[in-house]
Amino acid sequence: MPPANKANDRKDTKRLQILKSAAAAFRHRGYYGASVDEIARALEMTKGNLYYYFRDKEEILFACHEYALDIVLKMLKKVEQSPYPPEEKLRRIIVGFIHTMIDDFGGTALTMDLQPLSPARLKKVIAKRDRFDHGIRQIVSAGIKAKVFRPGDPKLLTFAILGAINWISYWFDPAGEANSVEIAQEFADYLVAGLLNPSRKN
Image (tube, rainbow, N blue to C red):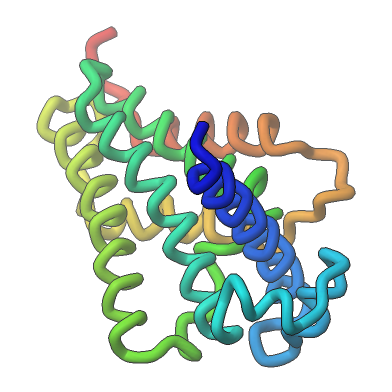
């Protein structure tokens, strides 16, 4: 690998470490309560070194959202292009989404505050969030049309699913008994089962 590529890889690795440290700080103290010093100290960096990778705290928050959303949108695209039936597509989305929240960002990132973002950055994050929301909504709609899911409003059902998952960030404890695999499985079983049409043909 050329030296320039190695340097870029190292920079990307360090940026991701900063994002994870920041996500943990934002989760415990909130955006305004967490300082750049605190984020840097957790990585044994100076604030000056951290500014080599990000210009300010808002850029770190924006990068957290972008990184997490890019992961779930990539996962959504893969699921959308798969031959799986609607209930399996939805299950895979739920499981993947929860793993992203817990494994990559300790139960946060996608639920972090948007208010501090500039209008331009906020617009980008909302556009990606909407893409994810609409993707799930289309899967739910397809399941209803196929009579795999019971009749209902796809928009409201999608809100219910995302609301349940997003609430994980408020109670998840990395030191707790339940791990991401168990949580993802339980949520997927419960949320998909709640949509299934009892009169469907097996």
